[in-house]
Image (cartoon, rainbow, N blue to C red; front, side, top):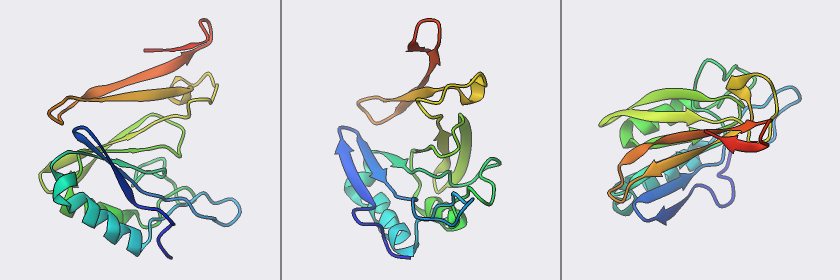
Length: 164
């Protein structure tokens, strides 16, 4: 499987390096699997180790979760184990994903300690299930590149706004 056009790519924004990966591809009916492929994994590793990127807060953005209890075989990242091995070598400060439409937290082993993984809901999915309610996250990184925290904003029917 080849590297998707334009991926991975990096955007430098102040103390943050956003490393974007594409896990999307066409899958057979009833499957929603994703993959990175060996070329994209190798390119991502090179980006994450680049001195300009490594000197910043490295935020990895991808659609599929790297692993987890909700990433069943039909919704999984098929080369998740290879991604985990790459993160063990390179590290990152934070990995965020979507795909499963639920608020999730995980940690992956990195060379300098655990790497936080945060899954977020859809921002438009209206359901009574609080864990899966329409929401979005705001991530805060200070000027020194330290992770301050994450604020989840959930849609409130009564006010028709997103609230903390």
